[in-house]
Image 1 (spheres, rainbow, N blue to C red):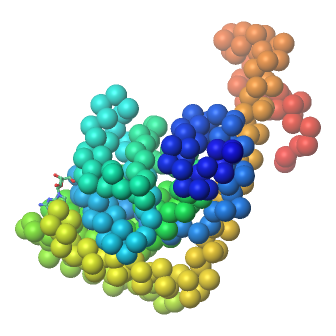
Image 2 (image 1 turned 135 degrees about the vertical axis):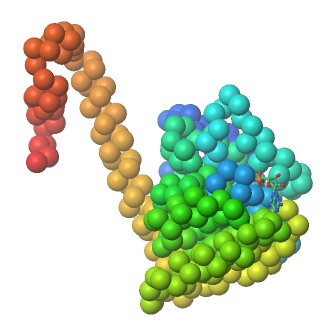
Image 3 (image 1 turned 180 degrees about the vertical axis):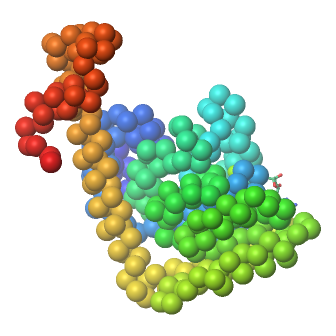
Length: 316
Ligand SMILES: Nc1nc2c(ncn2[C@@H]2O[C@H](COP(=O)(O)OP(=O)(O)O)[C@@H](O)[C@H]2O)c(=O)[nH]1
Ligand SMILES: [Mg+2]
């Protein structure tokens, strides 16, 4: 039986193995993923974004619990910007969601984002597809994001939940700056703390300034994730956003859009990889290096000269 077949049967070890192959960009991973693709496009994907320490993992833990009570199968991808060396926050995620670790219908995968803050790793989307093929009804994506970084996860989720906490000041400013339009649900977590009402009112006031005509007006909720307060209401709001998308045919359209973006990404990456390989192995590479070191030619002229020669179908 192929790895893909095992994944389709919900085999946990096989799925974990495939995810590792994809993470390491091993060719075999892509071959198996291709076989799985036709079986994907069923999961509901929820993105949870907010600053570090806002209580995202605690919230995810509560959501897993709520969805499991309904018998739903859940996958979680927690992307953290902490380096793989310190691993502190990832450990935090694991501890926060530990009570689900013995549940075979809950699959939790922690990833350290490479490079940029809160950014998704290249394989996040592929891992989503694997969980989808495993038969997860719900996939939750936890990512750190402050300001514009949220945009990335918004692209990957049906419902985007932006989490903030009282007393952040600047972070609320960041929300104001550009991400008000991209959240589907706003959560003021740690509502047990002072300033929750103020943060709540500020967000509501910001949302009031936007015209939501024909769009889903994002609800704002006060939540206490560590006490489980407000979770039922959050789940209810997730479902009302889901219903909104389904009624407009946007649930499936989402997967079509993802496919288009993935295609574009694959073509660009692969083209870049092939060209690089070709150029680096060119006999004249050493000469080019020398002329650049000596500054006898400028990098623009040389780059375009080489490209004109290599790219047979000219892209003008
Ligand atoms: N006071 C309070 N603390 C909370 C609440 N939710 C989570 N926390 C605490 O906030 C800390 C960070 O939580 P975590 O879920 O790891 O945050 P993350 O970095 O956003 O994933 C932990 O110590 C949690 O117990 C809440 O509603 N109120
Ligand atoms: Mg976390």
